[in-house]
Length: 112
Image 1 (cartoon, rainbow, N blue to C red):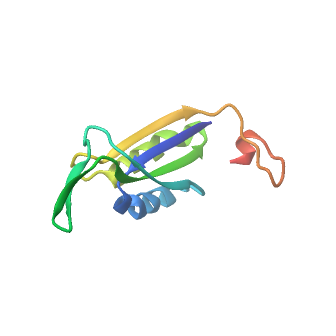
Image 2: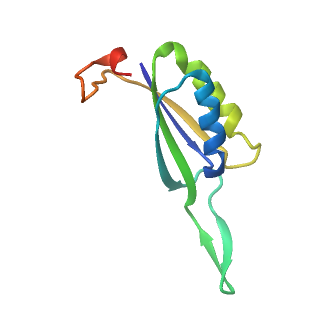
Image 3: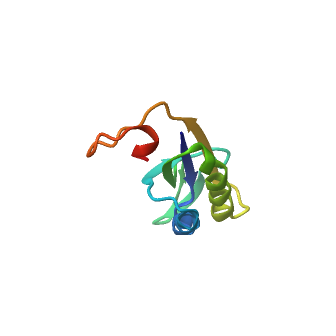
């Protein structure tokens, strides 16, 4: 089992969700976050004064999946989230040692 965490641009969330639903992904957790990478923020003008925005708005998606689905999920996220411009985001894949569904007590693959 793997945990796929993707940090993407907020306006690409619906495109990514639709691409994942085609693959049969049944659930995910989405969090609004702020951060920066190579982008390093940008300058904005507010009421005539210029200031630097160091942390840019992003969306973090977390998806738990069986090993056989990981490659397809990563490819779907990559294709749907890509704009070709700086700040498109990153995808991380982690190992999951255990999962428990609280309501039923099911564990591991049955809990996904």
